[in-house]
Image 1: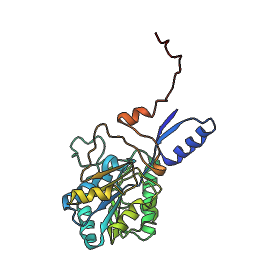
Image 2: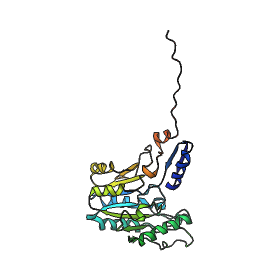
Image 3: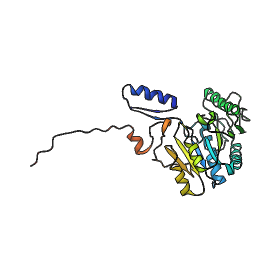
Image 4: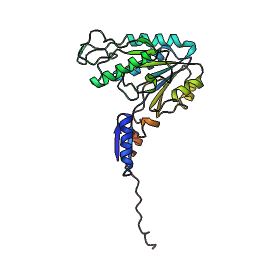
Length: 264
C-alpha cells in the first residue's frame, strides 16, 4: 500500500505505477477550493474566508483561492477582501514582532517563480489586479521569496488563475447571478478537496454545502472536528486522513475459515 500527499501530477503517476501490480495507492492531492458567498453574508464572514488563502503563505492544498460573490454585492465584497489583504504584512520568518495575521516567504525559488508566473498570467488574461501583484512587499529582503497578498477581480472560471492550483497567496473573486450558477462554478473544476459557504441563514447555507462536490465543506467556520476525515473528490485524490477513516486506509479485510466445533 502506498500513501501519498502532494501534487496531482505526481499522484496520478503513482496511481499508474501502482496499477501494474494492483497495489493500493491512496492519495491526498491538490485543490482549487471555492467560497460561496451568499447574498446575506456578513462583512466579518467575508473577511474571515477571504484571508484563508493567506495561511501558510498560500501553500496549502485546501486553500480557499476562489471566492464566488453575488453580482448585487460584488464591488462591496471585493473591497472587503482588499481591506483585509492590505492589513496583512509580509515579514521575514525570523521576525519576532510579527502579528499572527502576518505571513512569511514561500518555500523556494521554484515556488516563488511559479506564483509570480500565475500573477503575470492573470494580468495577461485580463483579470483586474485589485491589490498585490509582482512588486516585492515593502521592507523585505530582495534575496527572499516574498509574495504580496494578491487579489484578482473580474475573473472568469475559464482563466488559468482559476483553473490551476497556484499554491500561493492569491485570491480570485468571481461574480455570479444566481445560487445555481454559484454551485455550477464551484463544481466546475478537476479538483474536489474543499469548499466553503457563508451566509446569515445557517440552514440554507447547509443546503448549498450539500451540493458542493468536495471532501469537506466549511459552513460559516474554518474549524473542523479533530476526528473529521480529511480528503477529496475527483483529482484531489481518493485517500482520507484523520479519524477512523484515516486508519482504515491502512487495513485489509481477512476472513479465516475453520471447522465448526463438534456438537456435544
